[in-house]
Image 1 (cartoon, rainbow, N blue to C red):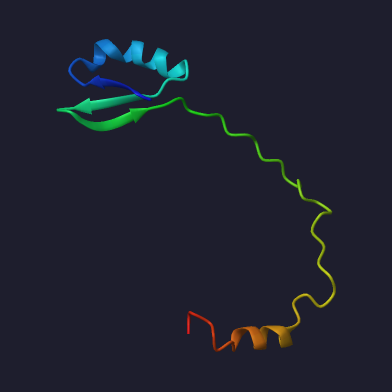
Image 2: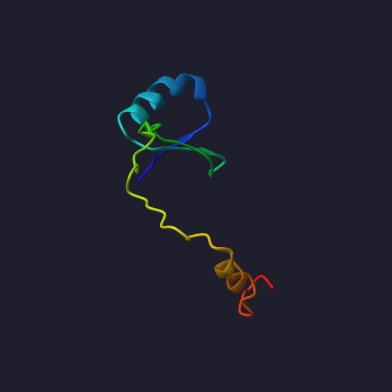
Length: 81
């Protein structure tokens, strides 16, 4: 459940609100009883490592033979036709 704060004195409240968000709490900002924004901690995204799937995907000879594509492209049940 998010804490709800009115936007009456945002400058005075900002430091305290940021401290609460850093502690893991979500804060909803409301104006005239309507939520206009939500503050939440910014998560650190994990760094993706290039080559993580190296050697795990194998293309067999003929995987892209054109005769298979003709049958696939001429499918009468294709919803995009």
